[in-house]
Length: 331
Figure 1 (tube, rainbow, N blue to C red):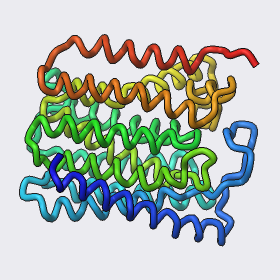
Figure 2 (tube, rainbow, N blue to C red):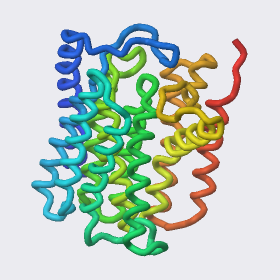
Figure 3 (cartoon, rainbow, N blue to C red):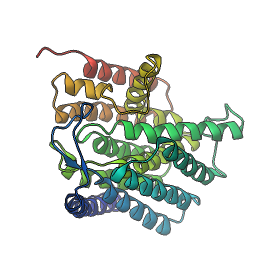
């Protein structure tokens, strides 16, 4: 492993660890708390908004990587600007709530700004669509991904752990392009920052990520996955987040079919059902991370061999995970 990789992970983790501690002190002092309700998976009021430090560290580290890497994507500064805007809106939402329509409008604007960073890159959908439709479809997927990342942030350690897995997986796939590709460093910075945050967010969590963290984090990781696809690595880009995509999408469709208000909080995701059935937060996250490790291996395999065999294997891993999380357990 290159020393630059180790340095990025270590620096991101330490800064996130220390920064989250400072933010936690502020949240407690100002009583910015997530109070339990019928849809919650926690039982005591817990500070919300700890993702502020994670995003600040991640944006800062990405900015340094971009400034130092001669082959950094030219449009990355627009992506970072979009993440900052989303973090600002998320911070305001964590402190008092914002109308869903306003949040959606800001998210669409951030995605549109980020899509301009793909100028001159290959098509995300590998030429199956005209380039205009390709970008529109990519934007729709990006918008869905940043929202599902927020939806899936419902138990201690899950989104932090998923970010570690995605960051490592993205770094491994990007290394197939070239050993020093900046996408690898961006992924490792995300993994390191999430590791530092997990110290405070592992069950029982002392602080929650909040919208200030989960939404811009989904935005930045979504850009990395789309960037992999635009370089021709669409199978790894699909495989790495497959559990999050499946859990969030299947849950949304199930609620739509029942005519429910899909923008309202609920406890129907597979991981939430597993907790309700008696598994601890830590046990659920451990099982998800085990599946993620398998998905990382499959993504790295197809990045080097471009074999289609990994797609049914990845689908099988996620199907088995969903079946395990969703099954009833004796009390």
